[in-house]
Image (tube, rainbow over all chains, first blue to last red):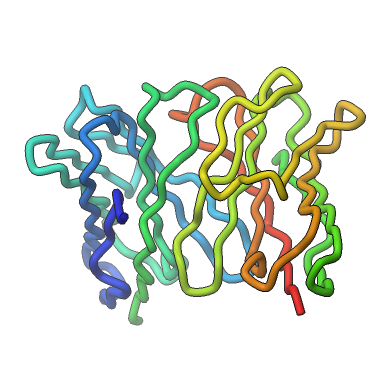
Length: 115
Length: 114
């Protein structure tokens, strides 16, 4: 039962261009969404989050967009840099951001930034 | 920058043996978590821990699993009788108050059950 889906296992983008990573979810109880980045042999690193009461959140080169009616969110990275090459995980929470919540993760998208 | 430390980085154990995975969360964090990632699959929530008790657990976290905060700094995951399918990367994480700040994950322990 894939409640959080990342349908693209990999994505290749040229350096300097925009990277767009997509995520769909099925559970309408999810109200908080997060993006994590993971390098090999390391744990996931938090990037950016968005509450369901917003449709956009921006932090430097990273912007997350949420379309609640479509149950879709996306992460935009602009401009893309070589160090952005990593696996990106979308995650969701159903507890309004409370600390005890477990996160439901997608399978990840491997972003490759081409020089 | 504060980090979550996990030991060992790799553990090999025989099927049926007990294993204890260790984590040192960030000192002023209040919530602690264990996640696992089976090779090629997604990261899966196991359990969250707050105020010295389990707050939430998934279906994966059955009677074979237990967690403990034995001394105020360590946070452990015990698997009583390991099975081949327990082979995975186990990640510990901690957070201060709420998930909207994101967790800080450790680098993981790769558990291999043979």
